[in-house]
Image 1 (cartoon, helix red, strand yellow):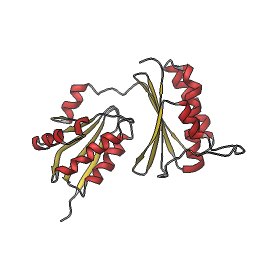
Image 2 (cartoon, helix red, strand yellow):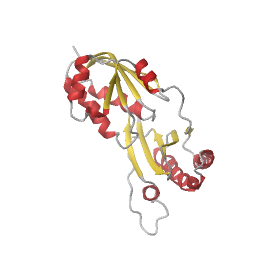
Image 3 (cartoon, helix red, strand yellow):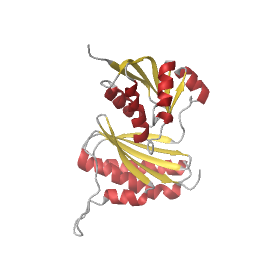
Image 4 (spheres, helix red, strand yellow):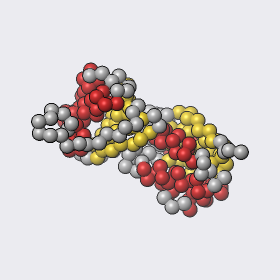
Length: 246
């Protein structure tokens, strides 16, 4: 009989909760990887994975969690909390190499109460955009408003330029609807664009006579860090800029 794993998202923000039930083994590990990655891509404060109804048939399958922690360490760098794990599973998790980035709690309710994750993060905006040229103007307007409200107006021009390049890439190449997110936390501005194309962007070296093709080079020069996270159904391009105030 084949193993079955059910991953059911119960909330996204400010804290994501993912309820996982069924059997976890080397066959169903990929399904857990996809579900956790999808939840992390929404950039929650933390991801609580409820495993109270999960049977770990093969402890090796827990390596998928350490793989996710390593893959998302730079972005979105979201704490991963396993809730309701059997004592044996919790012990195995502590012993697995690379799983030290995963913590455990008795239940999701206790985790939420212990950390006070109740109110939405104030410095974050999300915007759904269609793949049309006017999307670039819309995102610049939103960036200017946000930077002004968050008292980092001196970065509005730079952030607006980065946002324009990332949105324009979706308009030109992905041709899908997109979700733009801008957040400020601990002195870092994080800007992301999620689209529905699996094709990963790659910087290229255009000739001197070419008018375009320099967008990602510009993004790299203007930001402190940037990257791409493949997610189910597409990808997220992310960037970080320091504001100089933590």
